[in-house]
Length: 505
Image 1: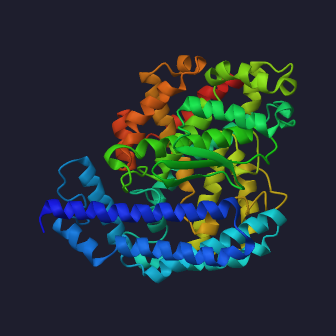
Image 2: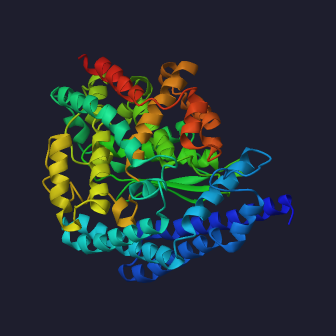
Image 3: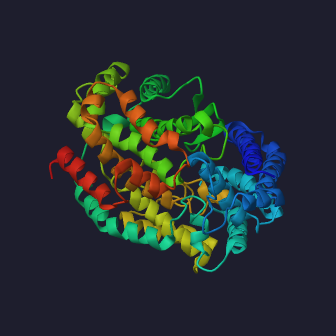
């Protein structure tokens, strides 16, 4: 077989795998949005079958032969590519094949099926605030994840690093720990200082009609560049973004949280994810595995950038607050822009990660990062997790959850076996701060926001981040787009500057 035929066949198989992944997303979306109670068993089998089929295609002998012909190996997994796309395609397919071929498809199916059932027990446990309804399923998930990790184990690549690698290629647990340790003292100090400010945000917790919330959010999403001919928004238990197809990117939010800003911020957050998905799924990348983010952390950098650096900024609300007041005149009566901004950015010791303020958010992530390592490879048993969660919450956040729904049951990730995912949320803050600084140097972002020209910022990010997909590894993309390697301290510097201006400390 010629090299040209080999790359052609590699791309053909890759597109088949991606199509199966999109099919899985369709099934998962349907389950999330409303499946009959008795339909879960068959749905778990359906999802397990699709997952195992995709796995078998990606780890087949044919795949190995193609990659060998193209010159891929661990030391030079890109082989000899004619262009950036071919190099990335070979790198991505080799990375998966090299790692996952040692994992039997029966285990892939078992994890997928168990995750489907665990999701349902997690939803029920949250609803009834009853940890015991989820505990048994989580024990089985943890056992399966440990078995998965053992399949990948090799010298210099084992334990937590193996799992983290699925979400943040090239990152290690020890490096994450070092990055987090470098910013943790500043974050704890800022939370301590700012949570004492006594900011009045009661007006944000009044009744805000959902229909008007949806209409206002839709205007902002359109201004951001969300293409409603390629996507839609809906409501779910836990906000998320799902790519059901290259031109079918869907986001959700929820309206059960106490503050109107919680639902608005989750919409903008997921909108940021969707912009990335829409940007990647274009040109030659469309429909291939290269149309994925450089990493979960890079993906999160964009949702956090839009949610916080744009959606909670003075410039943004200078433009949108008059419109917000027209939608909600009675709720905002007598509330100045300054008072609104301080309320929207209120720093407090709160329980729920997705609703946490910009300063304390990363501490919520650190809590999960430390607990999941102990749970998988330490001495923490699943049965002791609620107590350990509460202790860690008191240590990092200074508060103890009153209920398990406020604490250990609040996140969906562990029900799916996604251990190693949580660190990417805080890494996203670090990447995002660096990208924001670079964009602020290249564009007058304050002026653009004051004029409501969010599309200009979208175009900038689309060119430098979104359309690049997985052409580069995350830190390579960061360095290319900002001109320097990752600098964690830029995030805390950004926070100090923003919150000193907001609250004058």
